[in-house]
Image 1: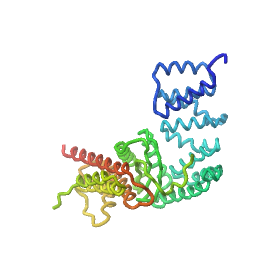
Image 2: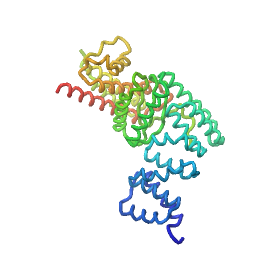
Image 3: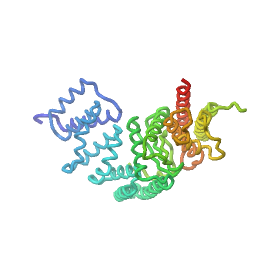
Image 4: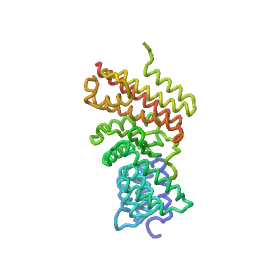
Length: 260
Length: 132
């Protein structure tokens, strides 16, 4: 190669930076500068991807996301880039953006992964038609060995839980949407990784999110913050809906299928 | 007159959690909720003497500005604390009634205890600022 860096080396950087992101680690300024100069000597998809991860792990998330968001452009068809984009959004707890692009990604890149994400966000925001649509697409892509039958059962579980929260609370979709927006913004602000998300008809309509990476003291603070923000939301005035965060619960119902 | 206080109930919640069993963890969540409910009831100055549905009516009183307007505390603070009570009533219902659908862990129990500590702290701040 006359200029730039070999593709294998750039791929290794992507792998290494991604591992640093997952471990919530960063690089010192000297190393960052050296790597930035090296990667900038070439302008390929892989070096740009490595630079994006480098930006993200060195606290320049917006800059890193610029290149990754190209996967949403109608003229770009790059499933790999889309999976990296989603990975960065998840690692940086950008839940609002994840929710905003979930259906777009599922439509643009039909796959088990993106249909799973789309139906998960539809459930979290109480959007029944989208939940049905994307879980049906997901089931179509599954083989028997991948748990197709369990996924069909899970579809009924999710729809019934969503119906239960609406029936019990008599809330509108706008209200459930407002509640979900507050919940996911608190999760982002506390840098929380989530486990199970559960809608139920219990207690006049309950929305519970398990938090995997924070201790009970922090979860308590999150619940008070959630209460403060919900009380400030005029759309939820008089609603019987309740929402809370929990340490991971070992659920035995409503969890027939989890996508891999 | 009994001298038992909301703090005694929270202490019992901690004993239950320390038992190290699932039944203890479930009881800890339940006791932690009741400690919060009693802290609210004993702190409010104009709470009506409800004859039924004490839980629901106490939350309703705290979250409705027209009902709690005579309290010497900011309405907004009472509303948020009322919502926290709702959160823990839901957790308590899950812990007490849903034996088959969920396994209750020591972390789930600790969530309630930490919430109660924070709840007591918020009430303490409210009562201090009222007195000053």
